[in-house]
Length: 101
Image (cartoon, rainbow, N blue to C red; front, side):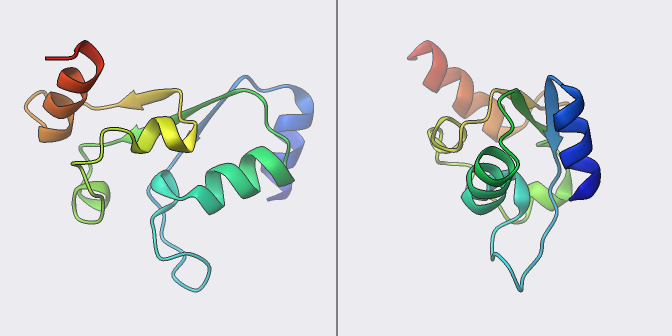
């Protein structure tokens, strides 16, 4: 936490949130956790910059996330998504959601 606080105080513009699991703190991985994104990053550390995800094609995300909830990232206040797998089902769902297909 100290490193993040120092970087935020320094004025970093972006934070990439990884797919880490801390089961004693939260049952969701950090990249889809309101605790880590809203409570810790935004409120406690007072980060005002942009939050982007780590690659959503990674197995850690695929195996734990509900990829049907297109609103999830908006609800969490995530500004950018990284998806390197071109045929990832989440990518198709998000395109439909954003474009309104």
